[in-house]
Image (cartoon, rainbow, N blue to C red; front, side, top):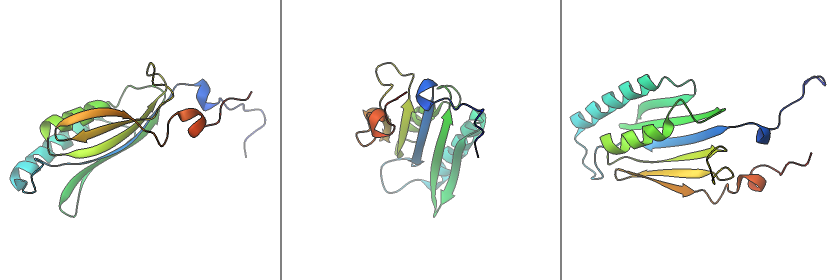
Length: 146
């Protein structure tokens, strides 16, 4: 039970950077990955992820013979971990990879009320507005009434 003496700061009165994403790691877009090369790529990605040292969800694991990266977090500002940089790094090191990263950064100029989607596909990262969750207010949260 919340104490009546504690005043909650509304989410819209503080900065936030929220993200949720996934990547299927592949060497090429062809359906014939070179398994030893893919294992070397995954080993390099594992070292890269370890250097990021995120306190949030950042996981690389093999499932059913395929490598995947899952990530998610909620921090006060866009800073560490550099999740956009991770997507760009995977695009270069494993150009057959694909995935999505949903981001809400209320400090991004002209995008503070949008949920953005970064699409990783065929060695490129592109940025899009997520129509299902934007505009953030009033789609996700109600406008401030106080």
